Amino acid sequence: MKTFELEGKGREIVARSADQKRALKAMRKNNEIPAVLYGGEKVTHFTVTKEAVRKLVYTPEIFVVELSIDGNKTMAIVKDIQFQPVTDEILHMDFLEVSKDKAVVMEVPVVLEGHAEGVKAGGKLSLQMRKLKVKAVYDQIPEKLTINVDHLGLGKTMQVGALHFEGLELMNAKNAVVCAVQLTRAARGAQAKG
Image (cartoon, rainbow, N blue to C red; front, side, top):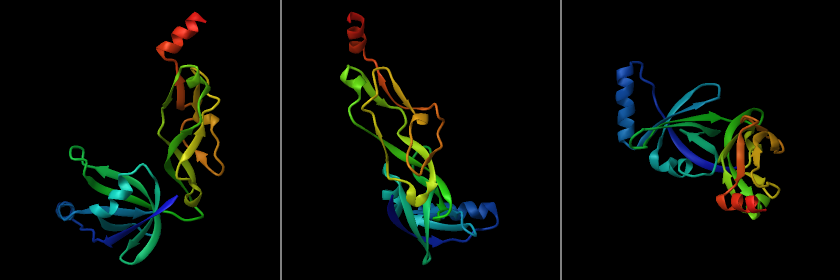
């Protein structure tokens, strides 16, 4: 997994909720995003700039984040991002501190490789799940999960339960369909004639 370096500035938490809302609004107006780091000895509140997280958020790739908050470095992953529903602006980010002795759950992109037998017979290959949830120590998690579809026949599906990746535990439902070769009208017509 690639490493993304991110600088953050610590921030104070105001006791009264009205003052807290005002402070958060001022941060967002100043192109800063409020963020929280969980998983360590204490919860850390900080801000990051919109420009700094752009390449971290708007990408299909996954990263482990080398977070530097006021000079203190820690390794983390992005756990959650809250977007404004209308403008799609980032409102808040949650990070989770990671270590080599504690497993984390992350969504990893799926990539299909090979030429399915069903596609050669006139079917259409469709990817149903673009990401799979995996549980492992952060440095064991790959950038993508590659699935070979060479033996996938016409009208057949590949489910999560049929997949196995070394050192990873798949957290999705075992009967969830990852990809399928669907019959097209042309393939149905060819089957009916044959």
